[in-house]
Amino acid sequence: MKQCLLCENNTEMETWLLFFGAKSSSLCPNCLGKLEKITGPLCRICSRPMKEEGICSDCHSWGESIYAGNRSLYLYNSAMQSLLARFKYRGDYALAAVFADDVRREAKEAECDVICAVPLSPSRLLERRFNQSEALIESAGLTHTRLIGRYESDKQAKKSRAERLSAEQTFYPLGQAEGKSVLVIDDIYTTGTTVRRVAEALKEAGACTVKSVTIARSGS
Image 1 (tube, rainbow, N blue to C red):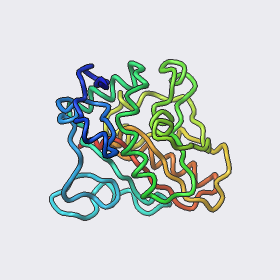
Image 2 (image 1 turned 120 degrees about the vertical axis):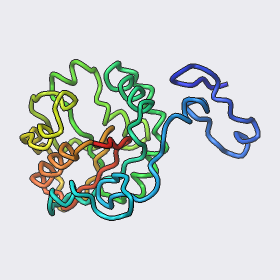
Image 3 (image 1 turned 30 degrees about the vertical axis):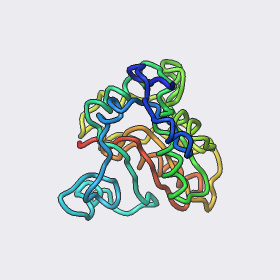
């Protein structure tokens, strides 16, 4: 019996479901039940939950660019916050498997030419030992193309909302994406600054459009 990646209890999938091709979950029903999928009216660009469908004030203020929008899968509630902290900051690489099916499905629906991970700065990569964006892509059985790099910068998690929104560009083009649509996959969408700065660097690399898939959407 497969063990939950968080609490190590059995995932408890019925044998007859496995017989008909269902995949055993990486989490037990109790842990899985604490994660909240995003449903209901959303911002058409960033997946922010809203009272009615439309475009949120943040996305209006960003204006037009090659960035075509974000699809977030889960709310950034306390359970998701703990899971991603364990995954990203405590190096539990195996937790990327929790989202493999979600990432694979959303990548297919995005219909982009190439997939790009959000790079870490050299010091952050040395500190964490792996890139969580690359881990999410690889766990889903997808291939990422290295199109951009990242300069050294302060941690986003330590910045206020205002500091995030006014952050300087830290990404730069490395590869060629001439005329291609690019899908960026990352863990959390907060203000949208990171993925829009990524889109700017991808535009320099020649990309014609950029979309993103993120595991969680913060309410900030």
